[in-house]
Image 1 (cartoon, rainbow, N blue to C red):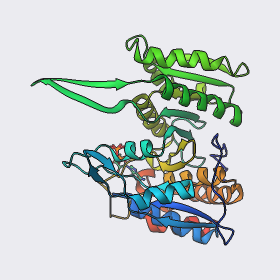
Image 2 (cartoon, helix red, strand yellow):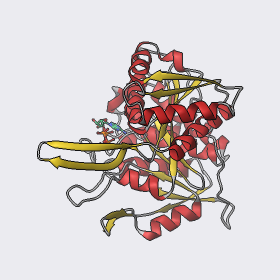
Image 3 (cartoon, helix red, strand yellow):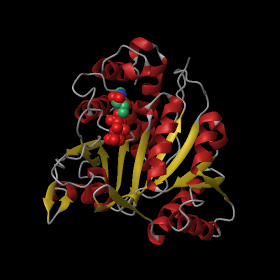
Length: 356
Ligand code: ATP
């Protein structure tokens, strides 16, 4: 079966970087933890083979605690601020040292308010549904991830879900802009305002207001439990829409969506800010398979293709994407174990290169 281009939709927003003295583009590279090194090296090797005009700037993001706040090293922050763009492998948060989530720290440091997570069936890799094509936008900075938790008395804890008008409006407006620029006709706001009347209620209220600025785009509202049911029973319902939702719902529904197309090894994402964007796979650091040569680099590679399109390097994105999809479609001996294949990370990478 022939492969076809998959994630051709671009992300809304503008790339603010400029070419370097050699006419190439500097991109900050955070290799990450667990399988991060293996999958990042695969991407670098494929870029070299495809002659992509990108100069990688690898940075160390090992955090320190400054006044109780998890802080990213200055050289890494400076590199990302200078280049305006980064590709990031999965990061694990150091345990037992009082650190806040590394991913959240990065999102806050660079104001990455919207996380765009497309999910599309891979032709040639059979799953129960052949035509999944969803776009989910997750609020990226607050909600259930605010990290505000207290022990009230032993045995009673309180966790605060923080929702602000400012962050809600920003991500919802982004969702409408994304729908407009990618030809999707509807924005579905996913929530649970029936229970969280004030917090999700505010999110819904913001969406109602912002929708007035986009009369050409339909807006609808769905309870998260209903969306889960419909996504699992007929994902095509969501083919021409953009879903937008608070942080934790986005985390859960995007893993559900990944499951519909073959798992976490396949799904890319982009963290969008006003000035800076960081592209990364949806999956985590997968410590269970780290260092074993089993990791599937596809999700990071497809994230990098979203990044290339954002930089208007579409031809390179098309070429790499076509090669990876052709490789996946060419049979289990060319696929990694998560896709019921027998290939290692490096043999899969070499197959992609030979398909370029
Ligand atoms: P986090 O909490 O950091 O989001 P997680 O608990 O969701 O992480 P992951 O690290 O994403 O977990 O891994 C979930 C499962 O998916 C693991 O069994 C892992 O091995 C598998 N997995 C994740 N990414 C990949 C990949 N790129 N290739 C192969 N398997 C993967």
